[in-house]
Image (cartoon, rainbow, N blue to C red; front, side):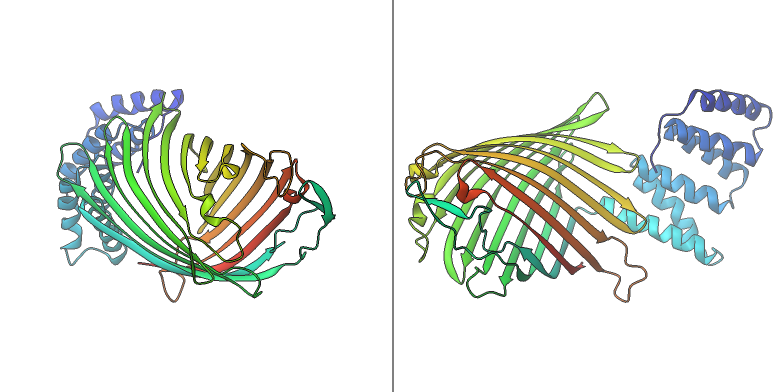
Length: 411
């Protein structure tokens, strides 16, 4: 239960009802009206006091117990809320519908007060990817700065895969809310065409976060990838972020990331170890809750210093994202534009340094409630992505997309 700012008319009405309540303090309807306006005003403490008065007048009021428990949960008074709900869950005379509501609130309290929490899931998906071979839009591409015929296949391909993940978080015994969080994830992505790469990635992270007037997080992450069952790359890095409110309008998160990537020799890829690098990224994100969900605007920039100078690069990116729930479906939309510049020209391609801009749009659709499913923890989903590359070198002018649908099982 969340409070919101009341309008001027609601404030006047509340003052009028409070005056009436002084004359008739045992009027239950009047007390409930006052409570509703106090919640609309965002004054949950006053609403709690009003409901306590209702319970003194009518100790058998089950509605008042449910409402006061919801308010106490919002205020973090979990012990008081649990005591109020016990009167309903332990009473055989409590109607089934009211008992169910009380049990849901007890579960909410258990979740909020549990010091160690875990979650995990597996998902499978299948779909189709367009321009699977990454063919340039141009009929002629460059080799040593000379035009040659573009013979790359222009075709789509089937893609399928699965993910498995698990996370564990533990609240540490400090005065300020402090959490230790860690997770591990395995991704497998296969394609139908034998000439395309099958990729497996194992990744993990662990972080430490603390919340007060601001939220601070620091941690490390690592990943390992193989391509077509051959070692391809490893990655290890650290991340730190700070989230602060901005005049009660939005939250601003500043994130700094540093990582080291190691690429192994790989048949068919020229100088793959030369791509090994140290990368540094900074990001500022503004996130605002709205009446229909949340929106965020992020700006990021980074630098990559590779072992081979021709892989040194810089990038800037801007991304607009939004999330909302419609009935039992969660919708996510993201639009982004990234500009990447290489510091040194790859003379095997062109005498010019590559500069490429990528525009990308993605849409995710996921069912978030499973009460009507045979298995309540099974959630269907669909992801759609399209992108377009615009480069000063013909080889990198390309576009493509992917659509995939699948099922996720969570626990």
